[in-house]
Amino acid sequence: MSRTGRTGLSRRGVLGLAGAVGAGGAVGAVGAGGGTAAGAGSAAAAAAPAGPRPGRAPAGRVRTGFERLAQDGYAVLAGQRVGVVTNPTGITPDARHLVDVLHADDRVDLVAVFGPEHGFRGTAQAGGSEGASRDPATGLPVYDTYDRSGRRLAEVFTAAGVDTVVFDVQDVGARFYTYIWTLYDCMRAAALAGKAVVVLDRPNPSGGRRAAGPVLQRPYASFVGREPIALAHGMTVAELALLFNGEFLSGAPEGPVRLRTVAMSGWRRDAFFDATGLPWVPPSPNVPTPGTALAYAGTCLFEGTNLSEGRGTTTPFEVLGAEGVDRRWAEAANALDLPGVWFREAYFTPSFSKHAGRVCGGVRLIVHDREAFDPVRAGIGLLVTARRTWSGFAWRADHWIDRLTGSDRVRALVDAGAGVEEVAGDWAAGLARFAAVREEYLLYR
Image (cartoon, rainbow, N blue to C red; front, top):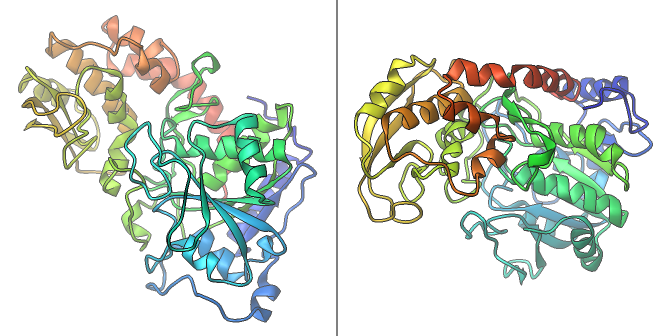
């Protein structure tokens, strides 16, 4: 990962942008030629006609990128034909959808909507989407971005007739959660098609104090990890967009995209989602609560095994198990004395997905200290102890675990009988390198 400026924008320029946003400027712009535009729309907002407000909410809460875009009178979208990549999480504090708000405002020429995995309305399960349609509320065409990248996605943007692609989707903070790679694919496709990208920021629901877990190795790249970032990246989507543009797209044939990021105000890196004052909308069908998001970076690793990761229950990714698993797993997991979490013996019957309709034994995670809890180490501890205590343990035949962890190292070490600290030590050097690069793109200090 290069730490020299390859976009024509120096690291000093990126850090200067972060300072401007932190000081109260709403909008930062990073393009192929560099430059910033902090708070550029303030005068426009004052002169603009009254339009739908982003909503009322308690003072002192976090204000999202969309709210700050609206407060600036949508200045960065002026004169542009706009398309929005979003899903049910793209809402205002009073639970209106941003597509409805933008469509009703004469200051914005909204012409298209683009749906990621699970779809614009969020009805599809993992690995699915809703296809093309027309939004009944606004009449806008809805295009499907899922499983499209490169020229195919660039052609979608061209067919939609947009000048600027706006991204506003709630992430959960894990490398293998696909929305950040939809963002990455949209940035590359926009660069190919000569379009601009505007990223509206939202909180990382698990906070952003640190990165954790293994860094992806490029031979294992897929839609659950396009580029070498840590499993729990500890970044917001706007910060990731800056990192993608500076570290990865600058070396691509199409070059970096014309990128603007609209930062939040009031967000702290040590804040969990319940401290933001914002409403939670499940970003996908199996992430119903912020607690799910907190555990997800570790327990989603069980997608790479023959155990249920809790899909088809009311607490997905917080309960894990399979037929034949008994209390010995919870006992072994608790014996690891992992910080911030207890493991309780649990029994459940999934209504769909793995082991559907069958009684499973396993563990339930109880996070009692969120600040101390490391979901990736917890996930590794659970893999290690599941393999030791249940004779039926097996990896998925396609070695999906290697895609999730970013290499074959975790699987090989667990199979060799390694413990949590040995597995974590294996990724320590790569994580330290990523953490140093990550630091240069952080917007919130």
